[in-house]
Length: 293
Ligand code: SF4
Image 1 (cartoon, helix red, strand yellow):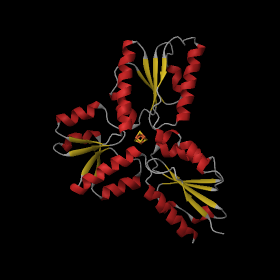
Image 2 (tube, rainbow, N blue to C red):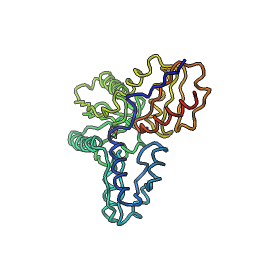
Image 3 (spheres, rainbow, N blue to C red):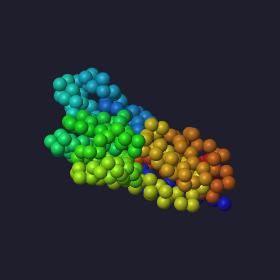
């Protein structure tokens, strides 16, 4: 019996990362090499493909060495300090910050100013080491708290005006859980007279990705999930997907596939992170077909 293999129709690169890659490729048609500040995308295979075209990844301490040259900024954005250093050292920045992230930076900066006047606080649900959060912090004056999960809320004082935001790449369901816990803290302490504003800042391309994946995995036996090992979105989605199937495998490239994973299965589902390009999913599909033949 032929084994059914399907690629998740909801998988593939998000708009912001796709746009940044396109900008890099356009520039690499006109020049032999191009430096990018940090990995353009959390996917080693795609980074290697771009490196073969001339992309070089440089760290923040090397910005000054790009004096007189172009330097690409990735979709997650950069804090204002990066723009200042670039200006001081005559580095031409090519800003591939995702427009959705740019809008969030402006909103968070405005909210911080507003909360400074009202002696309130801004709470940002996200990962403190994520590039988007590092950039966002740079736009803020006043009281800003980064919370990773509900346990981080315990350190906060709910007796003040508050504006809540989420990192764009978080799941809406997780954001709502954290906000709900904060509302309960306010209620318990009888602080509900202080204004609370919850801004819906999860990117729509990500917001329901977990639910889409669960839907795609209905009645599937095996999940092959393709993602960079460093991708937080990839690791989170894999955890969600693994609960829906009998067997789940996390791979970064098609060489890691093994034929015995597919013994006695009726169907195979292939999915990936929002930083996994479609070509990599198609390559995985072809390799599985080879292993089954
Ligand atoms: S996840 Fe959304 S906000 Fe983040 S880069 Fe992609 S499109 Fe932009």
